[in-house]
Length: 448
Image (tube, rainbow, N blue to C red):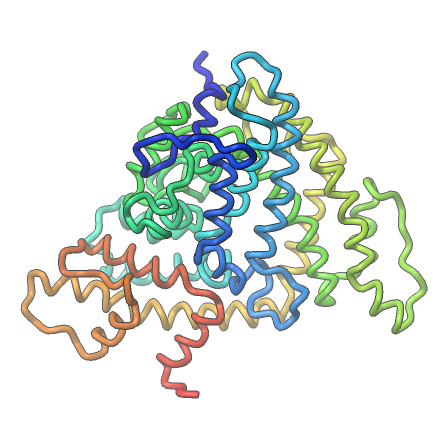
């Protein structure tokens, strides 16, 4: 049976660079990956992008940046723990220390949401819906079916790979030039939008414009090919995904309590299998103010520690199946019953209470209007540029103004229609929530 090797999976060569860096004492290429991500503008913009609660005025609520930092912290702990248990196995690369494995997972976690558009997952859904309507009116007829699939299934994970390997730092010359190990640990869905896997998972990890990059990453790491432009996951993806699940489940509930959407007692009961039964103190205005989230913050450490230990232990148990690409489902699905129950119940509580809250529906309708306004203006303008290559008709005044706003993302006559739309989504997808709102308001004629 074919199996991947840690020697290949932990490759320290950089994408877009023809040579291998020397390992400096205390700062390996994997630690440099983390630094490159932290200092990037794409990462910085996540400070004004939705995690769950769009356009919240509560400064205590998480955004994409704070969420990613917390996921990276949990991912680092997972990676180090796993590294300590794997380092003495046969065929383990001699250049990899436990903290290197921690740095790889930490960097993948730091980047895991870097391609998300404004308004988070709701933004993704809004963009897909808009392109469905646009395609129905023959707006995408110049694109191949595979290219159309990229837009009809707009996916932050695929946009993230484009951001890391094309858009940041060395534009279209390797992007951030991260190591192959970090990129492989980032690619959660190593297949394309027109694949059978995407039909099953409703997710994909690379656009048609980056399919050669996905193939390069998979080939360098030795990922097992499972179809045309379709590979099994890198084993460390499972640690990144587990770190995200742990934080998503626990932190979403904290935010729900902070915003008054769910009751603290509901969360305490949910966490009781780990923390033991805890009673909320007698309620007074002073106690309510003090205990609003502090009590949960103190319990959070104990809960996360338990879940990290469980996930790391499960990963080690599953290493043979991970290396042959045979593990079904995510890592949490193979953890102990307490871990499965805590994560499952937390997600269910968030789905039933937080995601269905009336105020969330109001902000999502507003967010949809914002994205609709932006797409209505910029997509036709981008396609109009392409048409000028075969049509001498000048661009309309309105199209010229839209294109001027796109700056370095402005498409050219040399672009195909698909390339022009990719550039447009680089521009719109990279916006912060606030910038998208402000720009849509101005395009609607509101001058103040």
